[in-house]
Image 1: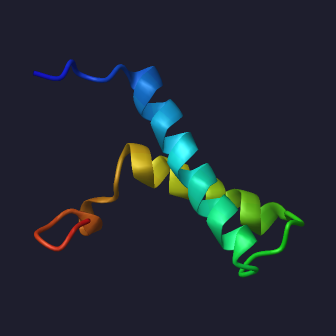
Image 2: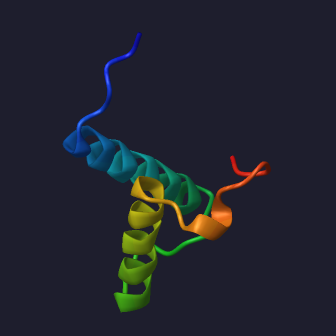
Amino acid sequence: MQTPMTPEQRIADALRLVAMRLERVLEEGRRSTRIDANDLHETLLSVADEIDPPVSEIGPDFE
């Protein structure tokens, strides 16, 4: 049986996941390495969604 994750572990994992996704799109050339307020906003929302997904995303088709 796996021990439950602490809130700190969940946050760290969410940050790592979003960072890996961002790194991938940078490598693919789909995003610029320059960041603006909109990019920061989108990144922070992505982290929040990983920690606590919006209700509309939870369902049988949710990955």
